[in-house]
Image 1 (cartoon, one colour):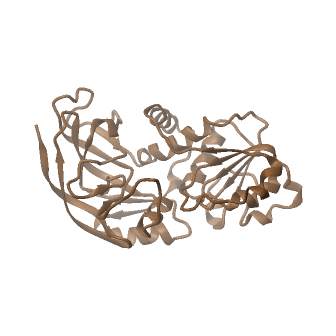
Image 2: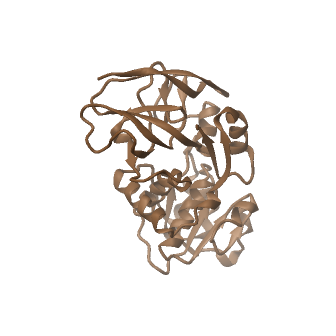
Image 3: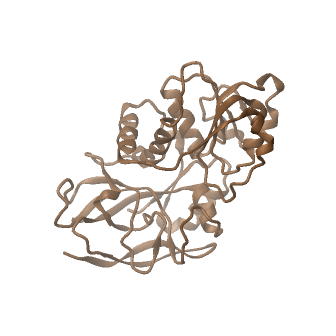
Length: 320
């Protein structure tokens, strides 16, 4: 069975040129699925690099490109080998990759998402707003499991955008109490459970030198690792969670601390499952992550708010 057609989608035609247009899809594999989108979200740091034609991975892209790496929706049609999902089921989608003539970078900003069943997570009930956070929290779960921590660990989070705020909230939900943060926009700091929050890393006085077991970098500005060197304990862990256009830092400025640098970028099905369970438990306050909701017809305004507004964390596009 072949699922073929066209649907409304947000497409990056070239750098800095987004357009709501018709997009063709061709889902011909036995495990493919069509999902009717209810809502998708804009990922600010990631989309900013994509829009400005900055490299966000080793993959080489050709325009047009479709962004959108998280959505909730309802299954319309399934391929013959799909057994664990049925039409009418509600799902979280993190990739739409059956587009014709459009490169998917996520590929979920569309009225209908053509994808493999492997790119879906079954919700088992009608979706709610917080389900849009499954991927973000799974990213935090994946990162935190890579680092050894105990109750006495002191943690510094660089940046309280969506990633920084989520990893801080997740750590707090696990019982870690000694979490500080650096965030340029004070309004974001007010949302966090962090103890000490500075607007600039230099605002941390000498009293904080040699204090932190773990530095979590989420801003995409790798040079902050150099600035944070004085705050690290010897052989502290630096966890990189941002999207980095440039990965150059001056090793001479950090080598005396001998930090362990860990990159985290892979999210698996087990991480999604754990994230869903944490969200269901209510251990994380989710409403503060959602700053704006726009109908898809206002996608240009939505992107401006998501990328330029100081208070923006998660901006949602409604496709209904």
